[in-house]
Image: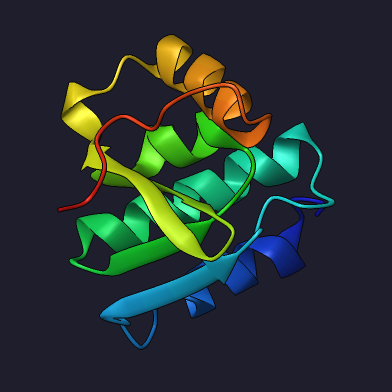
Length: 111
């Protein structure tokens, strides 16, 4: 994504209809640092206007930066769920990688 007049136009148009729910599946894939930062800005803007964001990503750092809640799905099941405010981001990334590698008992399991 290159931030030119076309990009800025898309940023404005994504908020025109004030969506209440936004579903995103790996939205950072293929974006460079500038494009990723622009996307994060758009998502924060949407959230500040009351939109609920459901974000599926392997980019844990970006996901946690936007999250109010975080969950990990493994083999089609949620194996970890917790409020983002209770998460130590560095530890969460370490735990996430270990969980995917099969070496960690899930914490914060849904009840």
